[in-house]
Structures are given as structure tokens and as C-alpha cells.
Length: 354
Image (cartoon, rainbow, N blue to C red; front, side):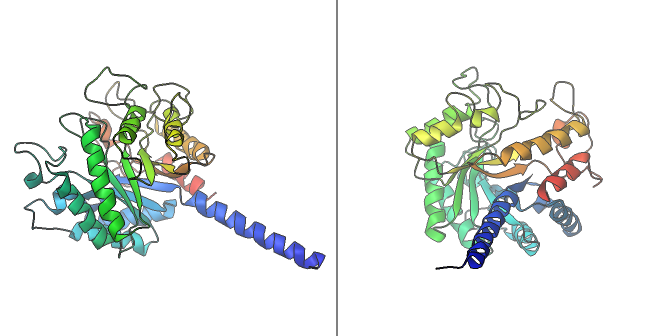
């Protein structure tokens, strides 16, 4: 029989391990969405960016593994260097990577189109996914996202096509898993697009309808997590509304979680691969004050950590892209363009180190 003292020690040890695991899960949720900005920075600015992000408490960075930039010239030309530098620099700081494989080079898309068109031949995309995995898995990358906001015409031209997208998802998943069976493959993060069954625009598909479309086209076995962008600005993420991309994850009927559960994927997570709020921009753009941005960020992480199905939450963006008040896209940063921290930087740091 184990003595009372030894039993107490064992229970305490088990509890300590359990609490450590909980802390590890919680800390791993602190992500940052960098988009295309990181590979374009000078070495000095990249160092400054990543040092500040590390100090803030970032555990994972999502950035564009831009097929168009890497293989722009031809099917046989490659420029991996800027992305290699980002992956290595993040790894040196203990920050993991979610590589968003997106955007089509000229030779792989219809003539006269932009990189936001899907590839003419799905197999070309699958081939690139395999090449990316073979290059970056040995460098410590084990999470890949399949495109960005494919439910909108802005990123899937000329209009969102869930049949074509699901073909791309299958091709990419299969190629990545052939390299790294343990990799996490995430569906392309869906942008907010009205309420469920809202067919008011041909240029967007509601995220819940989009996920149903992936399942309807046989994509259920070809992802490990669902990507989503639960933006709600200028409203707080706690807002209860059928149009809220945050609330659509769990509160509407149906919702992303209920669709996943109905298809036997209740054990898979939702990864919020972009979320945030801008602090300036033209009238009607949804900009909030810097104080409100900080308060919403704190509330978002507080709520996020209560969801048992939640993966990482990637805050967009880290640094303001510019200073033009006519462009809301210039002001999503947690630090200003001059690198000075906004209140949201401190709010993130407080949440990550709590």
C-alpha cells in the first residue's frame, strides 16, 4: 500500500503536470498574423519586428508563403530566400510558424489575371504545397493553411468557388501529408460575409455555408483544423448577432462548430488565423480608438481561452502598414508605423504573460 505521504506527493505531481499542460495550451493560443509584411522587411526591421513580438509573448506567427512571389518567373524558377529568413529568425526566438500557401504565379493562372485567381490546374498548386513542405518541415514548420479568405472574390477571383477550392484543399493536404503525416493542415481562413444563407452578393459566401460546401464536395477528410477570421470591429467580439463572424463560430444556428460536429469533426479545432481592429481610417471603415482596440483584444483572448475547441488566435496586424488616414488597412497594428507601442501591445503582453 502506498503511504499517505507518497500518495499526496504523487497527486501533487500529477496536478502540477496537468496545470503545466493547461498553461502550455493557453500560451500556444497567442498568435500573430503578419500577412505579406515580414518577408519584405529589411534585416534590421525584421529583427526589430520579431524581437518586439517575442517580448510581447507571441508563440506562433502566420505569414504568407506566397507562391506567386516564390515561383513568379516560371515553373522552374524559385526564390525562397526571404521566406527562409523569416522561418529561421522566428525559430531562433522559439516562435513557430503557420505558413499560408496562397496566390498564383502568372504561368499557373489565366492570362491577364491577378495572383488572387486560383490556378488553372489544381495539380500545380498541389505540387507547390509538396515543395513547400519538403523545404520547411525540416526547418520546423508543421502547420500550413490552404489559401486566404477563399470565400470572397477579393482573394478568390472572379468569384468564390467552393468546388474549385475543395479540389485545391485535397491536393494540398495530400501533398503535405506525404511529407509530414503529423502536420496540421488548416482550411483557408474565411472572411466575415453576412449571416448564414445570406445570398445578397455573388462576391462572398458566408463562412458557415462555405464550410458546408467543403463537406458537400468531399473535403471533410482533408483538413485538421478549420480556419476562420472572426472579425467583428467596430463591435466587441462579445456581441451577440447573427452577422458576427465571431458569434458564428458557436452561437448561431447553424454555426461552424455545429457543422463540424454534424460531420464527425467535433474533435478538430477552429484556428482564428486573423482577428483584430483598426485604429484609424476613413468614415464608415469601422475604426475604433486605440483604447477600444486594447480592450477588445483583452476580451477576445479572455473569451478565446474558455472555448474547448479553440486553437491559436492570430491577431492582425503587428505594425501599422503606414500613416494614411484614407486607408483603414494602414492601422491594424499593435504598434504604430514608427514602432511605438499602442495600448493593445501592452494588453496582448499582459494576456500572454498572465
